[in-house]
Image (cartoon, rainbow, N blue to C red; front, side):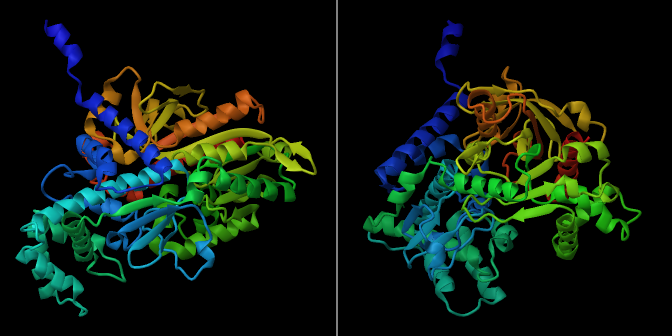
Length: 563
């Protein structure tokens, strides 16, 4: 009997997995429909699923008290002023950049947003469906939080509010700069509204501030509450719309195609298109620094360990040093392609035939440089599904005068950051397969990077499968534990791996646009261990702990390419 029972009770992990699937199906449906009201009937499934999931990233979203860290995470990824808007319109790149509207770029996400008027914010989507999912998830969270505030400050159905609320309103609407005393009085009332302590708010107050808006935290709480009151009392509901052009363009690789053509045109014009090409998806500094930084900084820091040099370069105050390195690189065969396609992915092209081996930061083989003259194409990170679009377009042949030139792609290396399930922040993961979350779709491959290539450097190295998740902000402990304990042997989770591999497999094994024996390298460094830290946010930024693993991976990839 006991055994039968086991089969009928669904585990938290299964419930969570269903909730994630429901969210994605619902978001696709609402997108096709063209508009919805997040706090109305149409947004109900999204709200319920999010509350059932209680993702780590959104902390106490399902409790009475407000979630402060989750709110900060989300606010950093949305445009300033979004809390004031009743109408949020997701558009394609529809020409606003050449208008009088000033782009508003969120602190932690590269996307252009435009405040159309007092009530409307337009958010430009150029990175595919993952970006829509990301935004809608964040907005759902914000609106749930805003209704918590609204319900706490309303006394009755007629719209009468608490004393705390009117005091907050006075502080926010006051045209005068707040004195420390006035600020602390306002925070004390706000703490009451949010069900949080004065201390908890003070701890995060500065993190919310912007130079143009020092009291931004109070501003956000006030406007979230104000619009919730409007919805609860006057049924004046916030609305999210998707522009017709966006709905027509999504999934058609519009930006990816323009982006890829620019790269191939640059290679063609510089007679590099037919040389062996090595593609690396990484950031815009580690390859350049690994090759050229030691030469520039040797004189200054002869005693320093090489990783300390890289660490110094990653510090904000060293803008001048970074410019010097970029200059040295440009004089030695680097070309920089600033992205204008909307894909938001900048590119560097390294023509190794112009390298002076004596000046390089790593040992390389003279013969390889002379005989093969490999070309390294470094692209900035893609976002989720966009990884498929960009690599898929990049690997297609280039058309010149009605003739197709196939790219001689020798290797594709993907370096990224991911959540780790074994080990901790700053460790390295070497995947042997990528698995799509919520499905059994799996992409095994032969990884040219091996555990032993990176071991013995004081950084933990793990090998196994990686889960490619639909969105990192939806994971919770139960799902992560399930991944970790299942026979899939999962060591970490990230958002792009399976999308990259799907494109590489299609190009090499199905379409035949590149050779079928193309070498692939994947390695990730851990931004956090969500099983340990709870929230992926609580662990904070990587800071300098990300420097060593990033450069270890970069050095290993470059040594394999150039030797």
